[in-house]
Image 1 (cartoon, rainbow, N blue to C red):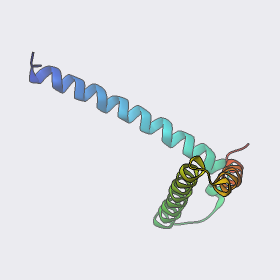
Image 2: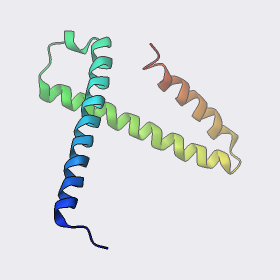
Image 3: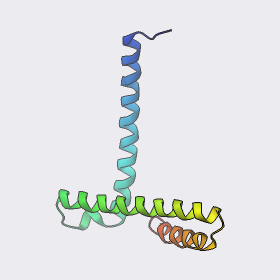
Image 4: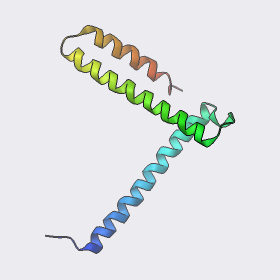
Length: 98
């Protein structure tokens, strides 16, 4: 049975509100962490700060991708991949450990 367009619009509006709330929670979390790290005390242009955050995000993505690749090779019998995964995980865990 097909939904009427008005019901679809209501669902879209509800999802947009959920998205807005999720983004607000994420922004508040990241903002709190940035404040704890002392970012607010640094004189930096928004564009430069955005570029630094993009670099940081790229580094985390690449590290995560590398860990997943090493984990896959460890599952196939490579013990060095397991050691690297543990070392990388321990290093990345120290960032938010407060």
